[in-house]
Length: 257
Image (cartoon, rainbow, N blue to C red):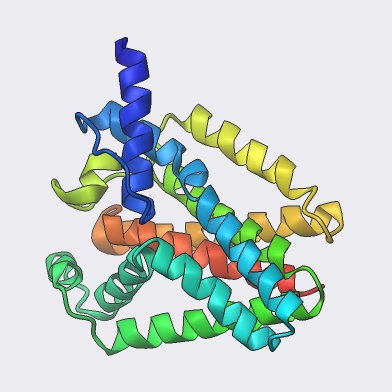
């Protein structure tokens, strides 16, 4: 197997193994080339989660379950499908932002394994927003399309956050491994493809899907700007938090049918 094929294989394995609970063979090597492929492949790796969530919505609707129960089940499937990784990142970022304005103290708070009151409140409120939005979309008959679109939109944040202009907050950790690995042109091309696809989301006019995706990324970009100012760049937690913010905003916009 040539070097390019090996890098592509290891990058896909890294993406699937990190972002989902699906069992995969560990990558033979992890370097910045492999990390770049893994970030670009993040939406593809998350496709099974989007499909499962959509199927849960379809199943819940077919069984006649209350919309809230269906929404909770679909979002629980996504959270369990990625080990709660992004929610954990969201909690840590919330605690870091609520800590002292000293950068090192904020990063130390984020590195700890416990979750403070700011993190708990942020996760609870965000999940409530996701459940309420998805329940509204289920009630309108577009829940499956909405949750699949939101899940994939959130995962596109990963390559967007890892473009070469965005620094790492630390010299080590996941953020350092992936920061700056994605060429801006590749990230822009991926974003353009996703925006084009979002224009044909079943049950929505073309502009509604595009607007939802664009606003989801705008919400994540706002968080990124704040993280760069407070922490000096991205960390693995910032990547997870951005994913959850984009997912939530996209769901909320899509629920306004």
